[in-house]
Length: 222
Image (tube, rainbow, N blue to C red; front, side):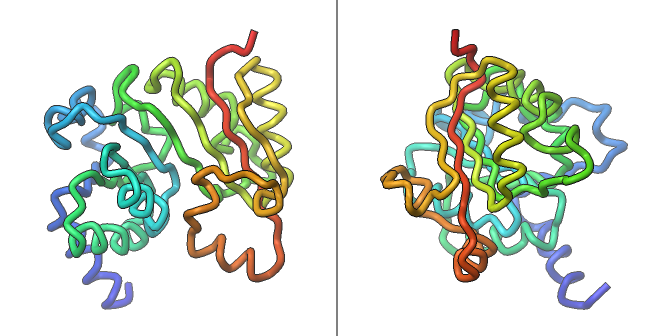
């Protein structure tokens, strides 16, 4: 392992806002489950997740723009999370946390109705494994278990197949579709989604790729 990465992993252990659990620990209750507001953030503000947050640019950007909300980025890659953690430490942001874990373990960390919103930013499209897609019915069922009844899911992707797949899942499950576009930056929307961009999003925009965007809730639309 490169020396720089080892240094980052060691520094990750010092961040009080980064939570990492080994698989053998998953049999024990997570101490903040159901009490993130009370025991960690010290307020009753809404909790918003970013899943597959990478370096945490989106999580940090949202937290800076909305100090009246709490943001938690989740990713399995510790080397990526280090960047976001350094920014949180350097800027002394009190409304941000990170969780290092596979996303399919999300119910281990959060309790029923604890989450108000979820951002899914440029996830792995899993072209041959639909059940592994973060907007598959399998994952949406997990998200439904931890979200408030009026919670919102936001998806940004450069993958049209993933976008179309998600639209189909939303329709099949009767979820409430709030907004959709397969060309975000020519859609005319003024939603916050256009104000924050990830590292890879900037690269893809520079290559002329279109960005797709969906906003929906897990409430039944009928």
